[in-house]
Length: 258
Image (cartoon, rainbow, N blue to C red; front, side, top):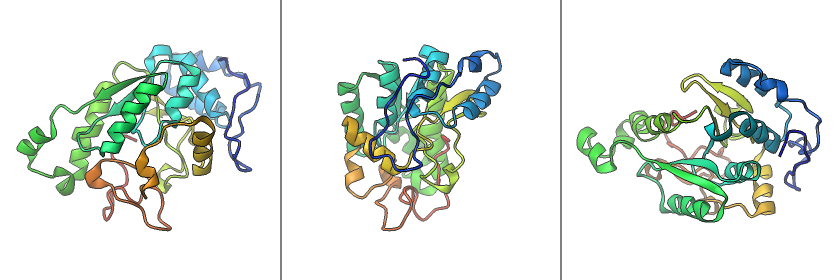
């Protein structure tokens, strides 16, 4: 698929939701730089109003096999979108050792039925080894350290073979994500970071899932609005934002990946 071709969007997209239609946008000039930060910033501006498929088309055309999708297996929406643009795309999953069984099951189902290449990253230490070194339940005593050991470091090591990575971040998820660019520069990892559904709402996600039969984590039907590690995730209450169930009762809102 090349930039500018017609693409699809959830039929139930509300007024103001990102429209997937022919735009005639010329993004070829975005590759004419050797500065990846400048490339990311220019792409973020040029593709702000682009569809998710157009954004992913640009990313896969630009980076080829050095582009991957990361997924927490809360759902497989971005993986599904990317597979439509680049069948067999790498989908990177972090197995922290603390996941719900439903999350591991979702990963296995995605690997089995979708046209993607699921790559599972694991921390250097098993949970038992970490307990022996830092004491049991580090996630309760020092969740930032636990996330650094079991999420941040494995991802940094796992992304070394890529120049760009895609996430499922959305601006409507929480105030900390409200300014997420569709394409930006990850200064910490020195890579281009693509968030193709940043402008989508939960309604857009739900409509896309329904339209394409995309796999989702069963916990989303059991009161969990955001799915992370089992010890640090609870169901959300009425009126809470989607990420209120993550590290509940703490000031912590992100694991450090973003």
